[in-house]
Image (cartoon, rainbow, N blue to C red; front, side, top):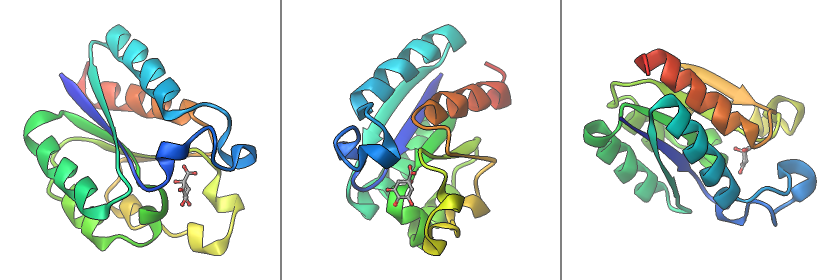
Length: 144
Ligand code: DQA
């Protein structure tokens, strides 16, 4: 079974972008760690990143057919995107929202998440380890 790990704007720069906030690991490191954990859990993972809202909406639509669960770090779209929320509301499997930083310790505009209206779990402030925690939660919810 397949899990999509979706990533929003600017996360292609993970490891280079504000490392004091987001750490030194890159998205390639996250992909490697999640693939290894997925293998343990009996789940295949597909990690995708886009800077474009519509592309993320399209991937959620693709997940409707292809994936049993979604781990998503919507990045800035967390705080702005009704379109992404609407797309996630069409997905039937579990959704875990991940934020690398502890958004509730940061600016007030990061405290509200549209995606949280749909997410079955929210992980914030666990660094890039949050993706693996999210994957473990998906595994539990789908009985993997
Ligand atoms: C983020 C937090 C968001 O507020 C921010 O816009 C990001 C990354 C995180 O992983 O901590 O781009 O989702």
